[in-house]
Length: 270
Ligand code: KIV
Ligand code: NA
Image (cartoon, rainbow, N blue to C red):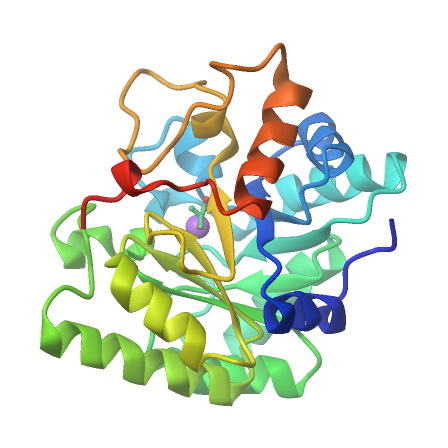
């Protein structure tokens, strides 16, 4: 396989070929996911909850993100992987100014990321434009934005109701205009995510808990492998249940997303 690139992602989006993404935090899982055909690996700040035992992603530092991005990058290089590597800008590393965001993004790009992700809409638009103009591909993230969980009042569905949906749409279009090439939509109504995906021709939507109408899907690696303490978000499927091992579970995830079989309607009741 040829390494994934922004033009190829845009082409997949245009052709309606589903884009597959999983989180990765270390070298070996990253190499396995790449071998299973996962096209995008996200070094998510979910690392704080999954690996560090934090209660939210708010406590994750830029240094932690750099460490895990380097680890994933080395894992991919070891197997001459082709995955597109995205790293989360953690809480507090981009809110202060566009310049601060650029400095933080540089740390992650120099650790091996191809793209950085940041949460929120509105004020983030100018930050995204600033980074993109300077050669840093950006993934936006709207809907449930875990770094602002305390402001949102919990891990709950976003964009419900006409006013909230209109605001989310306005922010999404502005982020596309600013140059965001990808956008995670987390826990938003399936109909809204589907409609936005049609409107965002230059920005590939990646859904999590957002129905099957998005350009691609993402899951937290540990969740889709059933490696957790039993509190599974209801939009997650445990791909280990019918798999003989981790490599097979990853491959099953890729097949399910590519075939439009994940998520199914029972997995999003909103
Ligand atoms: O940190 C993360 O894992 C994420 C995904 C859930 C999109 O941001
Ligand atoms: Na994240």
